[in-house]
Length: 181
Image 1 (cartoon, rainbow, N blue to C red):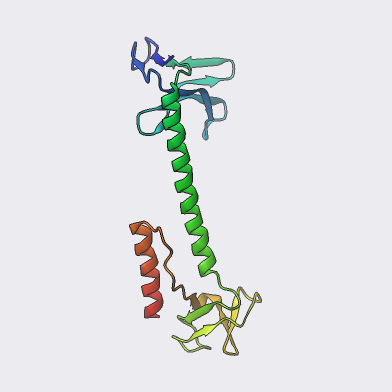
Image 2 (cartoon, rainbow, N blue to C red):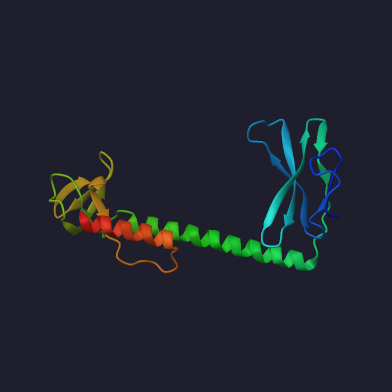
């Protein structure tokens, strides 16, 4: 059964998403008012999944704009499953890129860094971190002298594969910033 809108709704009498309703009802609690929940039908629109609001449910009462029933064909379910798998893989890959960046730029023993500011170690010095300590924030030992970790940047030389153009620009801007230090 598709979404059938009630006569008192803005879409009175219309029938939408015939053969494309994947799940119903789907409840989302209100972030602003915990007294009611919105009711949605998850549908396939031909290229992505959508949650369409069909009403609200409150303590002891409800207001329905329409009714829906799950009626997705096997083909629609296959398209929706493939879309959701691709979306999940893309989100995982983006998260992995962020984790790789964090790992690459984390200061710890053995990382090569460049000094960008400070007074104890000359600016522009490229050295390997000998030791770290957390006395007054994170400090690093470079060439026998202690300096704050805020004064150094990790040198990241390898650009990972699979970056989007925006991510590549951000990566190159960071590399340029290191070169100018």
